[in-house]
Length: 390
Image 1 (cartoon, rainbow, N blue to C red):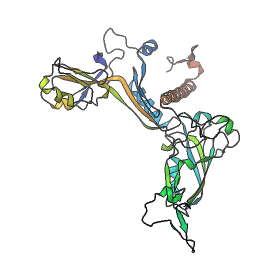
Image 2 (cartoon, rainbow, N blue to C red; image 1 turned 90 degrees about the horizontal axis):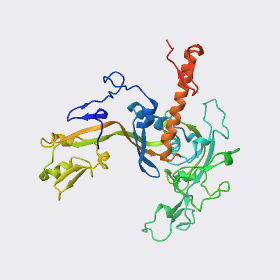
Image 3 (cartoon, rainbow, N blue to C red; image 1 turned 135 degrees about the vertical axis):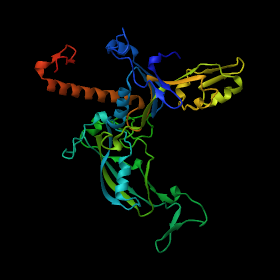
Image 4 (tube, rainbow, N blue to C red; image 1 turned 90 degrees about the vertical axis):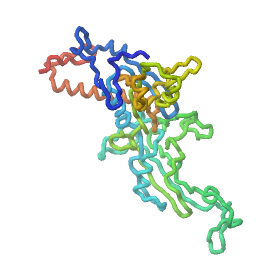
């Protein structure tokens, strides 16, 4: 893997070097490193490495760390989602306090596409069919008559031998209050305007939804347990779901994790003795070092090099210290994102870019207002030239 040395961040036993990019105007004589759009497009690469139903690993090559970190922060805190915001409790005789139960409910991801709903402007905003979804919950736990009997005094007891070991599922009905009990109460034009997000092929047992075999609006995962109930206990409430962003509350964050790391670069500078090849291999992640005993060679796998954590364990060995060079590629970012929202994993970066573009547009408007029309020159493509600003 041949990499331009200027792109590398050096990794030593006790320190790192060449952290900052040096390719800027005036640093290298007779070299023009002024920013150029065509050059940026040529060097920019986005490549998906792994994609599953709820997570994605992709590479972005050719950007600065500030841009990569902006994407990460936007995915965590500024991509909007739908979550339960208001909980109106009419009955809660479970062992979970009202406040704790309401907090648990708010953290349940919903299968509602945020792009089909309007945002909530604040406390003074009026709930409508375009900015608020209503769910109802009415769960009552009772004895299962098939496995329970009632004596003359009306007291329930387990049928049959007292020593038989029966599960809660057989003894009680509705012994768990879970996210599957969210029942959507559509209002206005919601049946036509707001659609559920289907991350897996629809179940043929789902009820018909607007002439489509789609699940009704509700929780992404219907099996999230919120409280355990016993006969005589009940939960009745009305839930209002609204659109928001993670910087206001974590329940609106569309991801469970969103992180990035720099791509490792490992170079063997001196041959490794076969007697210690396995020791050398153990200093790296699985698959990074390839030992060929027939040829008597030790090499680095370009495919699996990305899996290494650059623990620097190899630099602790006096024999290996001068036989290998460790570094990271400064502009090669490996993103790992796990979605816990209505967005598919591959959609999160696109949504983050859309949010960033909106931020840039608002900054541009502010710059135009600050400079004044007499000090700006707007080109045909809409960009504002600010070279005349004082």
